[in-house]
Length: 237
Length: 232
Image (cartoon, rainbow over all chains, first blue to last red; front, side):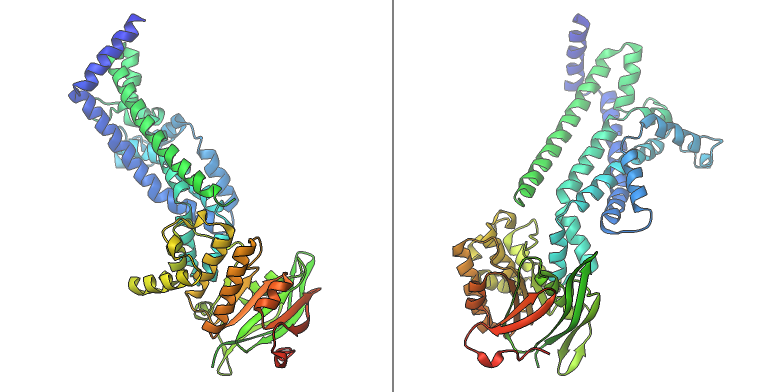
């Protein structure tokens, strides 16, 4: 019990004094997760919108696949990516293994299905009368699609927040493809795992608290978005 | 010459159910045509087909202007509009809902503002222009739907059950709006309803839809010369 309290004390000391090592780890975490989220949003959003707006052969299979991949185990992604990026792998010539780029790719793969699947499900839930109304007012198919997307903005934003939560908390994939190299690929979650193994609970605890704070902020945003969406959609009834 | 519409032998089925079975009519003179019939008789289907939102299984929908057939394209679709029974409210302000049709036509902001405010004033909702449209009552939502349609100054205005699920006060307001529209717009208004009293108060020509056919017509107001004039 005393060691836990001591760890907390040390952790707050580290946070308050913003240790340089700690700051670097936090910044790299935000950079990797932020970039991965941007990539996942830029690819997942159009993919989800296409699935929500168009009917084509194989659409249902893709939707089922995306929903399955929402729960993709990070270590499996890490392993798959490791095999692709390792020196003997098909993409070995890119020399990306054990770099932040490999970590970004891994997190993008994990976040993509979340953004795409939530975008798709938000679009298909839009009241069909809205689509018809846009058509009666003279909208072109492209303008109708934009209108539908605009109607789902809260759902899509919630999807992006959920994906951010996923990448921020992820450890398995980035540990495998990043290698947890100090000052280069070491991020918050991998540091927590390493320092816990080493028995350095102070730094692990400090990072844990920061990670929880970030997660808490994300959840506040997510909750407020969902609350706004629920409030507005309840007015349909 | 204004736009006119001829529907010829329209047939439509959903799965095994035959909804329309050879509807024919000619809408040429401006005024309010009231389409009546029991629930499920195909009124809404006929309106959607006439408004070019659905295709018939058989038969023709032809819009004419100056004796020539008008091609069925976006330009034609933008000259007609349909007010849906559930309106289809966009999750934004009343102003932006009404401005939607003008915005997608690429109109400038100043003109949009002027026309939207005029339309909202006409339906008595100008004071609610900044309110989220989803928070309007059902009667107000119908009025907003009318404003959203008339701001486009359509040559053909289809109204699908404009007074359904609306309280007496709003029904009277909507009927009054339709009556004023008749004088203001030199357009053809085709309204589906099953409220005979409402039809009598607002309509010029009454059409009955029974068993998939436009079976008979009679005059709503004092214009007996219009009786059966439009029937093919």
